[in-house]
Length: 453
Image (cartoon, rainbow, N blue to C red; front, side, top):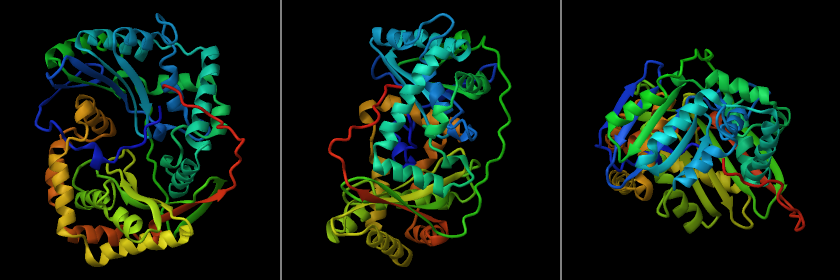
């Protein structure tokens, strides 16, 4: 499963911010985090690996995601698919996702089954078997997934080109699913190499949340993961994006009923030391919420409801990344008879309003109130408690960032938002990709189809 970064604004609405996170570390370097929540006899177990598409090299793009698929294809003692079958038979659910910065494997289970899933996770951490026959079948599944997610969807093609045009020398420019030519030429040895390079306790984090006691989890972690010997992982070389010196524009031609516009400004992510440019980062974070995410947001109100030049419009920003870089993105579908050029001008006018006038106190209050009061993930909050910890720690931030989030958001002022809009929303940082809709073939069937993992 491909995982697109959640905007931290949505991601860190802390439902149980004050609950203590217990942590430990095994002798082999594996970190363990436990968050107790005894409201129901349910446990979430997640194993995170600090290995994603950011670590790939040209010619082998998509291998992180391919290996995620292969992790369900058996070990020295289990058959292909048996991991999923055992979890399902116990009444649980499981899956995995790969992102640019990490790969995560998770289960939702009744608490008595925690030892079972930890034992199986430890088994595939060290005993995975990658058979050429199984790989050759699964790589076809991954290619179908790429066709389904990207090749069959014009807006996804726009987004893929946007990323590769905005990041010309940084690996964030490569799709997590990989380029099709790389997938067509990938071998089982490539997947095995990836597994041997990155899947080791010292490059992994275990997060358990739910109806457990921390000391019990630490004992289980020691029992199952402790004996796994640590391997030295490869040295990660600095990956610096080349300076952008002017606006970049491109057009995607694809069959579609509607045109589409995506704009992205290069902006920084939150520095790992939590000090450099941190005010800018939280101002960008609040601005993303003011512009998008609700019916009352500025882009929806202005472009969709008032001017009626867009059928939909939004913005987004990921403030935490391993690569230290991010994009502040705008995306919109123009109304009939409205060109993407007109829509681009209209979005820039909205930006200029913010540069000239800032935002209203009412908008600031709305965002700050929603951050404090929201329980976005109340239906499955235990899962997202674990997600918060795992994502932050794997990327390289302390999980205590959750506890600082509200206070930093509350400090953001209109003048700070004006400053970041003026500083970062300039044409020399801008990439624009639009969709030029081509005639639809009513007889053409989708090329790909989705897959569970």
